[in-house]
Image 1 (cartoon, rainbow, N blue to C red):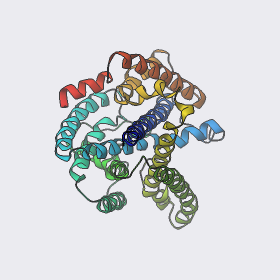
Image 2 (cartoon, rainbow, N blue to C red):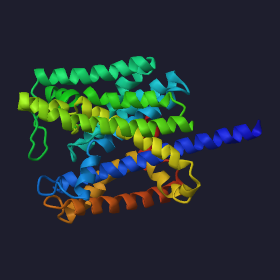
Image 3 (cartoon, rainbow, N blue to C red):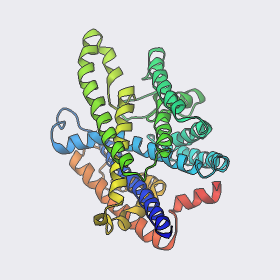
Image 4 (tube, helix red, strand yellow):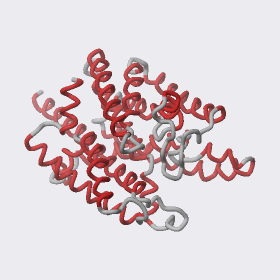
Length: 360
C-alpha cells in the first residue's frame, strides 16, 4: 500500500513537471516569434528558404496556442479539485489579467493577456459541460468564425504595415478586435482553452495516454498541413479569395490552423510528459522548471525588458531571422537563470505572487 502511494505521488510530480516543461518550451517559441516580429525579421520570399526561417515560421501561432491549451489544462485540473472555488478564483484572476493586459497593450499591441481574461471567463462557465459537449462547442466556434468572415470585413481597423489597430480603444473596435479580428480572437481561440480542459480529463499519468497525445498530435498537425497544401490551389482556382479559408497560418485563424495548433500542443504536451519521467532529464529539469512556473512574469518581462533592450540597441527593424532567434534564446536563458534564482527564495514569480495576493 505504501509503495503504491509513493508511486502515485511520483507519477503526479512527473505529470506536473512535464506540464511546466511544456510551458517553458511554449514560452521559448513565443519569444522567438515576438522578437522576430518586432525586429522586422518576419521573413518573406527572400528568406523563406533555409532551416532557420522554416523553424521560426513553424512556431508562429503554435507556441501561443500551446500556452492557451496548457491554461485550459490547468483550469480543468483545478476544477477537478473543487468546481465552485475554481469558478470564484478564476473570475477574479481573469479581471486581474484584463487590467494587466490592457496596460501591456499600451506598449505591445499584440498583447495576449487581455484575451486570456475572456478565455477564462467564458471557459470557467463552460466547465460543467460534458466532454463531447465541449467538443461541439469547439466545432461551433470554428464554424462561427468562418461565417463571420463572410459577413464582416477582416481588415477593418488593422494596419498590416505597422501591425497597429486603429480603433482598439473604442467600444466597437475593442469588441471587434476581441471576438473577431484581433491577434488572438475569442472566436475561435477559446477552442484552445476548451481543448485543454478536455485533456485535463484524461489520465495523463498513463503511458498509453501520453503516447496517444504525441502520435495523435503529430498526425493532426501533419493532416492539417497536407490538407491546406492540397485544398488551397483547388479553392484558389475557383476564387482566389477563398484560398484563405483553408490556411494553417494563424491570421486569420481558420479551422485547419486550429487543428494544427491543437495537434502541435498535444505533441508537445505528450513529449514533455514522457521526458519528465526520464532519469536522463533529472539534471536539467530543476534549471528550467522554475521558468515554466513563472511564465506570466516572464511574458511581461520579454516585452518590457527584452524588447526594451532591443530598442536601446537599435535592433527594432531590419534584422535577420538569425539575429532574432539569437536574441530570443539569449533572453530565454537569462529568464531561466532569473526564475531559478528567484525560486530559491520565493515559491512563485513576482507577477504570479501579485495575482495570487490580489485575486486569490
